[in-house]
Image (cartoon, rainbow, N blue to C red; front, side, top):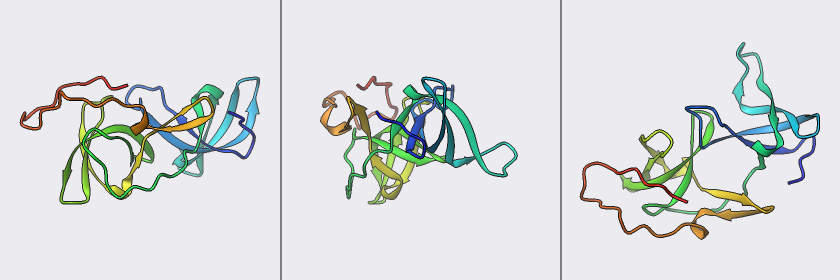
Length: 156
């Protein structure tokens, strides 16, 4: 990926409690050979007087994924849910009230309900190309909707 000053990117978090989350940012400068100073678009500095700025590794950055228009999702679709100022990777586990979806987050084990407007198709950035998750997932036959609890599944 060619990163330059002024690029709009997403950065992944590797901190406990924030795994599998991505935050929008703008690259404001290069720091050494493989790091960049970024300015988050939705996170504020501790003093609440401007955007949070941070130095991150180039390997933790990716371009902003292109939008994929969808009108609905299916159970087990891998999605990103916008919550707490970032995009969190999860799986659709059900539908509620017609246009709301239950999303399970493997990193925390929690499930939350989101309107379709807060969800996007999850995409992986591989070899300079965006790959929608529906193209690189396998169908799971072991999901039983009649069980009251959910098992922890490992997805690709």
